[in-house]
Length: 348
Ligand SMILES: NC(=O)c1ccc[n+]([C@@H]2O[C@H](COP(=O)([O-])OP(=O)(O)OC[C@H]3O[C@@H](n4cnc5c(N)ncnc54)[C@H](OP(=O)(O)O)[C@@H]3O)[C@@H](O)[C@H]2O)c1
Image 1: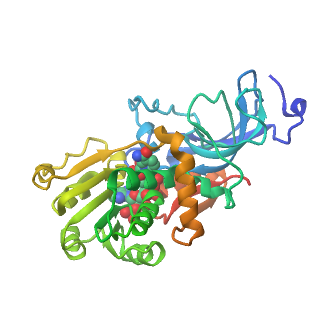
Image 2: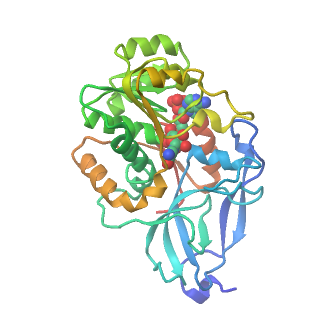
Image 3: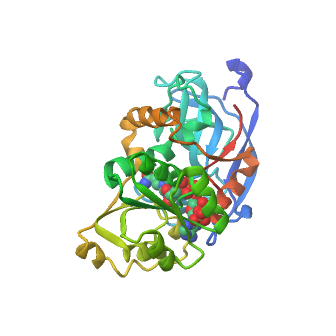
């Protein structure tokens, strides 16, 4: 085992990580997470050491905190081990032929200050040439921006004048999805929690109207989408999906991006009882996985950055500092406290 001094790199002898202290029962709470200090181990053959600069908090990772949740995407997270997630980090030492010191990477790693890895999982090199803050690579230029871009551009195909409805509309993916739909000329309606957030998404992300999911949703759907919903960009699933299916227009496209409302459910939620509405309205419903399309990230980055440069796309962040706040920031996602992309800055 080598030490930092042998490598001559300016890294610490120990680092901090946020581990899964307990399996969340329902919505995650801060005591489900704990911060531990670990010895820093430098790379052996085929390995790379990454200093994580930002941790991305992604609601979807809640699924793999449950016992028995292993699937073809990820294994269940072990208790006492660093919580898996997405990070933006820089290579500080490499004995891996594919990575050099200084490389900037978006990777599926863990909530930790440093990660030692053989880089067999999801690793995307991020070009350093973009003229934007580094954190944008977890926001409009990251998995978040890509999800909004691929979902809207490939599946939703919004046309000028159509009504596009977005759930979790003030969140990381939703805030960008709404803005992208607007760029395509659609009329946008966002679903969020609370009157204050309804106002914020109209002012900050250009939504034409907003629905408070804690209020009378059927009544608000009828009022804000009188001609029906042409596109539903669904980040939450659950009971909201069923309500929206009662208001779709003929030819509607429903983009299944995520299912926040189901991630913390201890027993499976009942499925929508009204799928026949898809038949009568000749509508479609399609899901997608963003990270499987990483060969298209350069195309998406170029377009998203161009829109940002034109002032048509805004990167919004809900930023916290320090690895000790990763668990708390994650909990805030399920309370709807965030506006924009939830990230924790570890270093820069
Ligand atoms: N398909 C893919 O490849 C892909 C990639 C990335 C993300 N995603 C998915 O995209 C979705 C959004 O993720 P994100 O990381 O951008 O999170 P986010 O939208 O920034 O945060 C989650 C939001 O969900 C809403 N929410 C929380 N609990 C809810 C509930 N029980 N019912 C309805 N809404 C609830 C909250 O907003 P309000 O309280 O304001 O409603 C909260 O702000 C997730 O489902 C995620 O898994 C999919």
